Image 1 (cartoon, protein in one colour):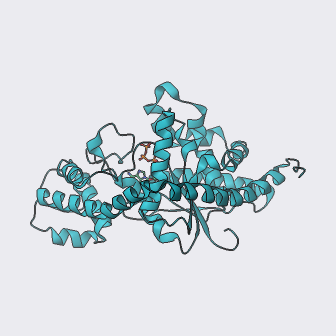
Image 2: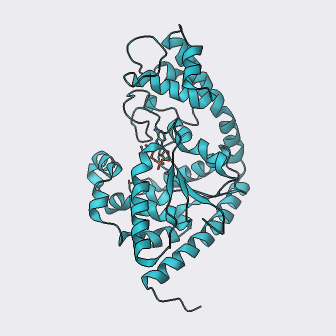
Image 3: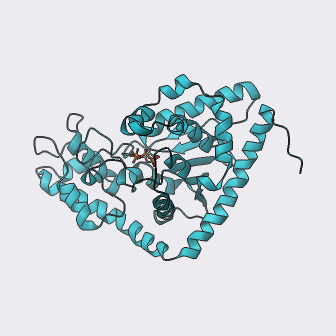
Length: 334
Ligand code: AQP
């Protein structure tokens, strides 16, 4: 809660290219929250360097991601859209929260285990304490909810535990956040291995549909999607391939799963895959058009970057100062 209004924080990493999992699981849902909440959407570039990045490429991707947020429908007049590295309170609160988080808690994080396995040559302390920085991100804005995909649930539980621990010692400093996870679209699976989530770091480009893929590429990827034995369009746990496509089609069109099963009754996988591809391409077309327009408006994007970072800093520093006082840091002499 910020200044009497409910608030929220969410963010994405400026690594890889956004895929429809990131869009359907998170970004698309953000757009509908702007009236009810004071919203903070961050390009979490500080999280990105837990894995080695090419500096020029990271800068390019961070700007592209920030532009995509706006292209997807987030109005920067109503939503605070900024780079994490422009608001130093993120790092300062993360340090303090590090001192209130246990090694055992961080050791249990499944994302750390997955990412450590993928980056055996660089298992750095930042990768390990990533969830603490994420807790700081969320708690800085006194967030009531955190709209994310299903894979982030464990990190939000840790954020709640750390915030409750801190509040138990120092009084009601932090709002305790709740995850905001939609039923459909919360875990979009890989098109090539439907038991694995679609992921930016997947080496196989056919496993993911990217937000900036053109229509032909999108349809080709869906045509190649791995499906299960049989030929019936039916949602079932034992049919992860076709169920994933049904879920994607459902979120892209707004149709319910029973409606989809009825629509494609008696039709085969081939026909359905083309329909999913066309629906996804139609859903992404306006986002892509707007993105291309915005990329040509350097001044507008620069202005968003500057003014929104100032707004985020204002709110973040309010919480940070309160925390610093509680833990006993001496006041600055102004
Ligand atoms: N497959 C997915 N289905 C639904 N939601 C998803 N999210 C990620 N993958 C899926 C949600 O997207 C948001 C941004 O996540 P992130 O940038 O922090 O990265 P991530 O969760 O680590 O996403 P990736 O794509 O899997 O990247 P890599 O390969 O780098 O790990 C979050 O809200 C996330 O829940």
